Each structure stands twice: as structure tokens, then as C-alpha cells.
Length: 62
Image (cartoon, rainbow, N blue to C red; front, side):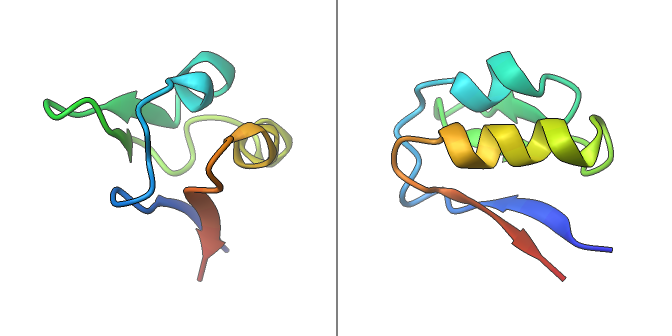
């Protein structure tokens, strides 16, 4: 099953992913998005967060 991953170097900290999929994404101490639970939201919701990221910092990984 693929899991979402965040490229911390690309993330701008806009928090859209956290707003859309709060069970999956959170913010770290540096203000960068991170995956807190790869199965925290359904796949459709996670995909919406991926699609909404303005800098394309989130992707699926095996």
C-alpha cells in the first residue's frame, strides 16, 4: 500500500494538507508539514491534500 510522504525541502508550511487531512498530516517545530499517521484519513482525502499542495511537496511512496 502506498503511503504519503512530504518533501520537507519543498514544503512552505501553508498548512492546507493539515486542514484537509488532519488525521494524516501535522506541522513540525520548524513549521513544515509531516506525516503523523499515514493511514489517518481515507485515501481519497489524502489524495485531495496531495492535489491541493501548491508546491507539490506531497506524493505517494511505496
